[in-house]
Length: 96
Image (cartoon, rainbow, N blue to C red; front, side):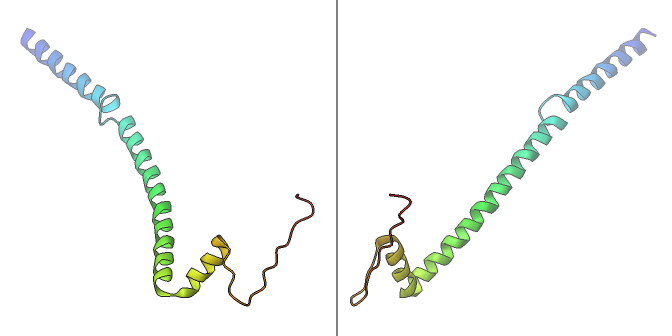
């Protein structure tokens, strides 16, 4: 009888230990859920960055292949004015 009780006690302790790890320890349901949410956030961030990279790659190809885009950038960012062109500066009266 005592051997049987000892065996039952050992099996019960093993069962409780495994249940503890399942619910609390590393690899538990809570831990896996937290990791899944981190993965989802990283995937969302990656998709945004992939879209930005795609736009940048298209812009690089456009800059390498044509002069129109370079001229457009020079006009908008650097204030390029070609010879025989007239420059007009419109000033807003409300914002001095």
